Length: 192
Image 1: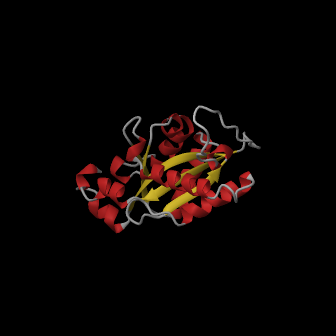
Image 2: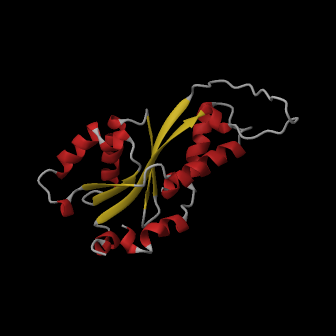
Image 3: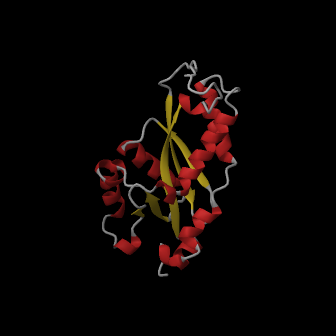
C-alpha cells in the first residue's frame, strides 16, 4: 500500500469521525409492564440536548471527544481545527459519513484553504467517505452506543440532564474500540 509507511510512522493520522446527539430521553431504557397496556413515564427537560463530536485514531485507538452546540458546518470546522491541534504538523485523513456539513459550505471552504497550493499527496486534510446509509462501517457508532448503554444502566442516578452528560462522557473515557471493526480498515491495507 502506497501510504502504509506514512500511516505507520504517524505522518498521516487516520481518524474515523461521527457526531452524536445526546437527548434527555436517551437515559431511559426499557421497562416491564402488562402486555397491551401503555406505560406512562414522566420526564422533565424533554428538549434537553447535547451534540458531541468524536473521532477515533485508527492506529492508537485514542478517542477524541468534544461537546459542540450543534452539528453544522461551523462546528465541524471548529472540531477539525481542534483535531489538527491534537496532531500538529501531521496530515489528517478523516473518514466520516456523507452529511452535508461534511461535504459542502464551510467545510469545503476550510479544506480549500488548508490544502491550497498542495498536491493531493501533500494535503493537510483528506476526507474519505463511508458508504451511504451504512453506520455499521464506522467504529464511532459503536462508541456512541456504548455511552448510551452506560447512561441507561445508571438511569436512577442521573436525575438531571447535566448528570446524564457527565455519565455519558465518563463512560466514553474508558470505552474500548471494537478491534474487529478497526481491523476492517487496517489488517488489509488495500482497504484504505
